[in-house]
Length: 190
Image 1 (cartoon, rainbow, N blue to C red):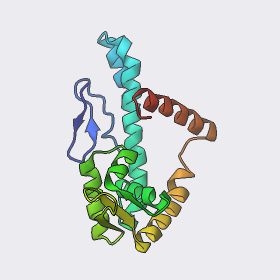
Image 2 (spheres, rainbow, N blue to C red; image 1 turned 120 degrees about the vertical axis):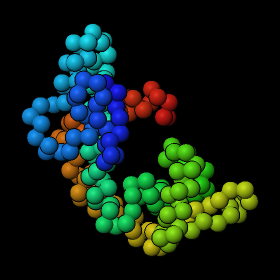
Image 3 (tube, one colour; image 1 turned 30 degrees about the vertical axis):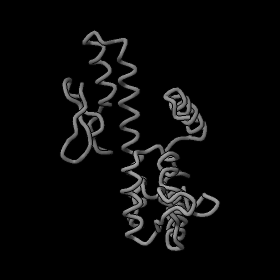
Image 4 (spheres, rainbow, N blue to C red; image 1 turned 180 degrees about the horizontal axis):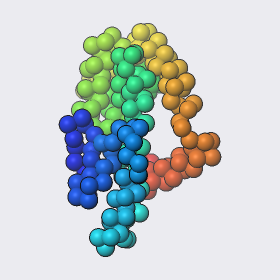
């Protein structure tokens, strides 16, 4: 089952017909498409990979579900989650500013992604960009008062609408964080 992107930007299963990420919440399928795909993996003789496929596909679908909730919360504020992360990184910094290279490193994203996010934030008057006073080759990004206010409003909204209501009980949340932390550590994230 190879994942393919559909016109709506979601993914759907290839061979086997099981739909994974492209299914909208409340679609009324009447069955779990990932569980069905796992069964098909076993039927095809790919049993040793079946649980891993189900875990990875479930994780990818969960990412889409959570990201949709986060983006729906941030959309009225005119900011994406990627831009929110930049704002919050600057908000938590001692001076309210950081070099672009540090932003990319801490957010673990490609420099082009940082540049795009900072461009949009700068266009909106939420950050400023200037030459670093100690390294003329580096760019320093600073949070504006408007950016600080938006970061605070966005955090308040995310806390109330998403983070305080993750649709999992406290024990499951802690277990999920533990499992994902191990996965990230084993991948060399930290």
